[in-house]
Image 1 (cartoon, rainbow over the protein chains, first blue to last red):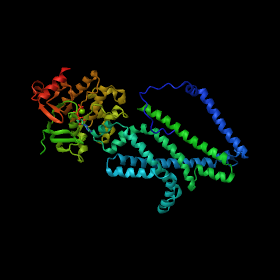
Image 2 (tube, rainbow over the protein chains, first blue to last red):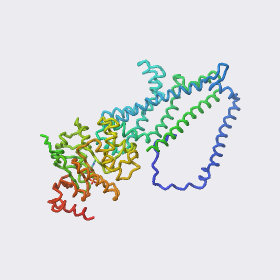
Image 3 (spheres, rainbow over the protein chains, first blue to last red):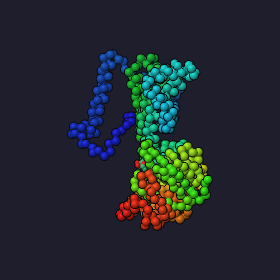
Image 4 (cartoon, rainbow over the protein chains, first blue to last red):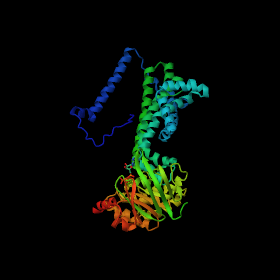
Length: 280
Length: 248
Ligand SMILES: Nc1ncnc2c1ncn2[C@@H]1O[C@H](COP(=O)(O)OP(=O)(O)OP(=O)(O)O)[C@@H](O)[C@H]1O
Ligand SMILES: [Mg+2]
């Protein structure tokens, strides 16, 4: 999913795959194999659960997604948790992008101080585990600056992901030909105008695929804020299980909801990418 | 100090790329309205010199004034200067994400602060001037090389420049497109624009140049009017070079 550094294969002749690989890759065989593997996994879990004497109660799951009672239609806890996850992710991603852009520009500024600050920040963030960073924000910086758990969570995710995002942005900016800088300079543009009107619009198509990967990454790592009980998807899952003891059904459901969300995002962006490609 | 008839004055410029001495004690004066053609072998410092003229490169010592503005790294007036001095590159360097019209209007609108209507009016005037009014709404990639280079010339003209620098404007072009670009440049020369052109198109040089300059290994070796330059250059190196490029 996160195709970050794709090797440049242009110009190399594609070797013809061996015969057995071609058979494996043909659509009917591939679909058949996929179905068999999935069936085995489901069957295996089912048998395993059966042997444990697990009492499957799938019929109780839909009410946590939505319910239709005498009061009318109502979203369930999982749906509300999903909305919260989306909100936290969007907020953190926007902040991470701003922060990442700042760090990338500092590194590209050519100023020794700028580069030093940026590199220091990157090394700091890269070498602290996400969970520890969250504890730092919630238990240390939280009380000092009077942050609630929600703010601490959003900031943690934003800071953590800004490191990788800054590298993505820097690579995208560097991918624009130097002649563009010279042309912009020679009509008297300021560096700000050059970035805004000339460089960044051209970098977007280099940045879009890895940025999508990073957004997917962020959505998944947002689950970690459940350890400080921010009411998002994973926390909701934990709460339902502690009430109902349906851990298998609920964890399967929560996993499926995350997957649906990230797949939807990838599909949406690849559509966007194709539109962008046409505009060029 | 500033003389009204002088557009560019370079005195004893030296330029280093790391340890490499790219310009060696270069002094040259370009008058207002003068057409200067610079030639010389590859690596002789022609690009470096004209890139110093609009602050794309900075000289390390010596003194350079362009249109009365002193050019040095960090000069506050450098962006004012760049608006006066247009540059046309070998590789065109058009903005590929903008249409032809937007390529021409973005400078006047964002840098000079014209309204869109004013900028588009100017842009259409200059598109006419370079003979491609019908391409206004295309993207650069949809144009031929010759058309792209003419758009690039128009883009500089839209800034109402007083000096135009050309760095081998035709050497990335297919032979059949060279003349359409040179024709535009000849017409431009007729308007009284100050032009400094790095090129090996000697037919063009004969037609428009007031002054010919020959560079070699970072030095200016010969400065003379075209008559003398082509028939009786004072340096042997220049004679050899001319024999080589005029042969084919
Ligand atoms: N950014 C740079 N860093 C290091 N060396 C450079 C740089 N730009 C140019 N040079 C060197 O400076 C010398 C002069 O380069 P310049 O581009 O001015 O030559 P030129 O006369 O324009 O040649 P050409 O006809 O090939 O364009 C060359 O030897 C070149 O390798
Ligand atoms: Mg050159």
